[in-house]
Length: 371
Length: 76
Image (cartoon, rainbow over all chains, first blue to last red; front, top):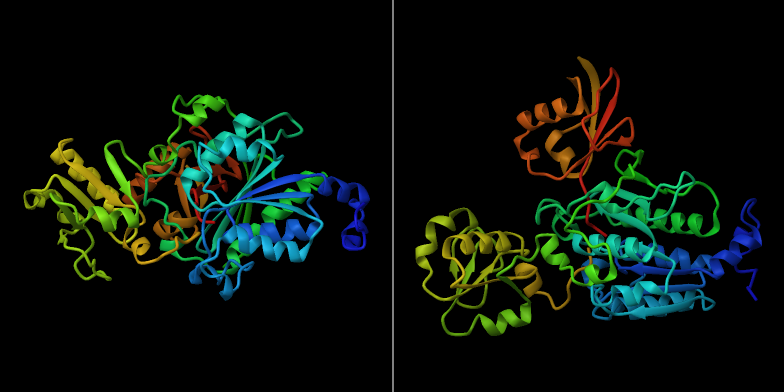
């Protein structure tokens, strides 16, 4: 039996009532990412009485999250976001069943994680995850509520839900192919005003409530864009067409064989991504050279032996490289992948070329940032 | 020639600047004009909407049409 006093003010609403509240109570919603967008989504859906909410995030809370990820406090720094979110949300509304999955969503776990839920909310911070979620929701027939932010602007849409006319759209109808790495800066590089994910995440939660209860006109097959500096807002119609791209998956089996890092150009055949802990070990191995492709004035400097060749001069300076194992490093891991591709073209496959994932930013932090 | 209004979002706005007007018969012609004027546009993934409808092929433009240029965002 619902504790109806808790929800009294929305049950009272004309067009909502106990029926809509019952629909929320029997809903199962999975939130992917408990960062800037995930925090307001989780808070409002928990407060509103969505019966079952899943939270997927493998990240820990860090200090630079706190200006926008308002579920967390300074005392949570270093804790898993899923654990901190669970404590806060349980206290907010103990009637909601919360399940936490402290994993990074990937082709290996996505089908298992998503199968049990009806509505998936994309609060992720990177293109590989966004395309992965779009594909798996299309294949499993799950509703997907998309939200994404850039500096002062946001985008919201609902995918994989049939409109009254029978049309269905996907994120791939909007952007069929991922952009090149570095083409679209993320929050870590481009910055973000703290309230922006609050606004966009709250709209994602609004769309979830509308979709689950049937009130109003949900953004099915529509993309809403908002600029919070001038409140320029627009709603665009997304065309529903047949997807014909042979490089995208159409079955669970094809999905599980996808490599979304490769698909989004973040990983390349023959170039290894290495983590900060691997870097500390492998940079000291024999026959290994570390190349910093940043400009000479960029800080902080590496504390392992390295040579400095700015990316713009890399092509002309490959004669400085005599070691077989090459590790390319830059500030955020974007120029280093470009550098690794340049060297792969010039030096061929006899060299083991790798790059430091997330760059020196990642190396100097124990925790990785959620955009 | 049709006189149209162009609005842009995200990084595209950083390249194109504030909303402006242009003259073109269709979206392909408009894009090649913009690519010539703003070479940085060339390799960027973007989506075009005419009067708030996202288009998938070359579309004829009429006076006072509004063309929106949108990039994908990844942040969350």
